[in-house]
Length: 332
Image: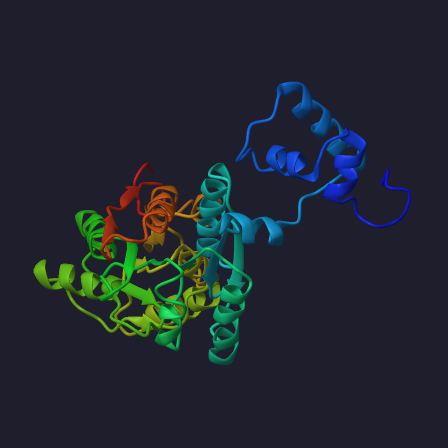
């Protein structure tokens, strides 16, 4: 620092070096509310650079009434689904002059009970939830002061803004694609949910409509291990499927390993389609055919919703698209 000691430079230091008042420094830093001549502005900016001055964000937040922080609550970040969502939100938020403050619940009721108030107390301007909280009252904490939106919701939630992908439509596309390949025994691997599993329901509906056998689904967990265990359950049954719909990309990747260990190949012995469309599906082998959620579009909609908190609680649903690769049997 050019202040001559170890303390951070202050607004008074900048004013002294630039030969102006502290009010003028504030006008330059905050771009108002009063105008400053171009020569004076350059002199102040030169002093700021020389001293390495950084405005106090808390003081500025009190002055302008905004911290520019968006709290994003997720159950984990090792899952590429949540990682890609956070990345999309962060990219768009930064382009709008905001920043993201993530909070991870680890699906622990005690932790989430502390986490959400922690984010509120740290002054986030808004909250995005990409999770199912065990205590649903936390979704509404701080209302009506803090705008919030629930993402990853295919169904509306009374009184709250929601954004999601059409899980029912996406699953129907995937299962119908496998059936169009001639598969009659199409298995399902998914994880537990506190609400209705629209993917599992749509899978069952397509099988029923096409008069295909409906075998018990493998409900394990929403990760690679869940896919691995689920595939082994299905393929070691008395009447194993010739195709599998995996309810997430991570489940699909885990299923790939189990299929190979059982001495089978994808797609010759077992066709496979996953759900989400993350990078995980692109770099597996073989690459997974998947139904993709539009992460960027949903992130943008979530931030747009937060920017207009006084409107009615809306539910925005995005269509999903089939990304065809080799795991389903196409392109062989």
